[in-house]
Image (cartoon, rainbow, N blue to C red; front, side, top):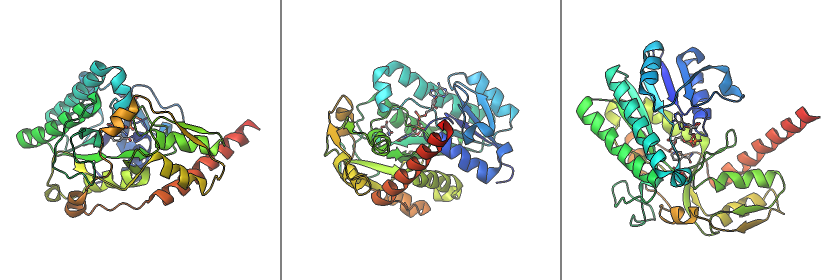
Length: 324
Ligand code: NAD
Ligand code: SER
């Protein structure tokens, strides 16, 4: 581990801003290169090495991999489900061409390991929605889901044909408080907390009874690092591993929040994201991840809710102190 040098794409996003800090803690600040389209606007992530990188610029990517003698790439940059539907061709280009640039530079420069995040968006309306198995019908209806499914197949292709050690997880919707989400269908499960802490009502863009698989960020970080640190022989799947922690619908999350904010009001005005959510699983069978590399989540919906509210209130108090 002490000789590893890591490059992260999309490092300023919801996942990257926390994964970058976890990687710096493990590998040392000097060995982790955060990259994104624009530099971080502050916060802890701004304290380490940062390089501007558009993942569509393969030459700049190759230059950085060479300059820093990179041995692992965490390829997080992507256009998510709801944002992707607004500009499908652009989302396809970023998600596919960016991934090819990463895989090709990894093969050319003998990068030892690559991480490719996939998503529950690889499933579609004909997928069995409950306890969705690892292998099943996959007919994604968003450009994001199509690109993630294609990306998974290319992971397997580069593993089989170029011996690239690429590993992948199908994350559920990620919930966190450090960086806002970047245009997904599961974003309501983060937005709702900001309104609850501000003591304002929340208008949800999904119906009250829309069940989706979700995960709290510490579990997502744990899963990612466990997968990447697992022995080579333990990784039996080179597409995305199913991954699960909790499943709930907006009204259940509102009920959890009301344990702490009893007057919290939620209304439901579904928009185009409802159709996307309806095409995704409600719960996931992650038994292969549990068997192959001993995955096990820590957070339940009630533990996550308590922690989210606690931390968002702390942040709110800090911001108020700065203003005084
Ligand atoms: P995000 O939208 O918060 O962050 C994505 C980052 O990628 C942003 O900082 C953005 O600036 C950057 N980016 C976009 N286009 C780029 C380009 N051309 N070049 C370089 N950087 C570019 O996304 P996230 O939630 O942090 O997701 C990270 C990864 O995890 C993505 O691949 C996403 O598909 C996957 N994922 C996320 C979730 C979730 O709920 N957040 C769920 C499943 C999978
Ligand atoms: N949370 C993501 C989204 O909603 C799923 O990958 O797009």
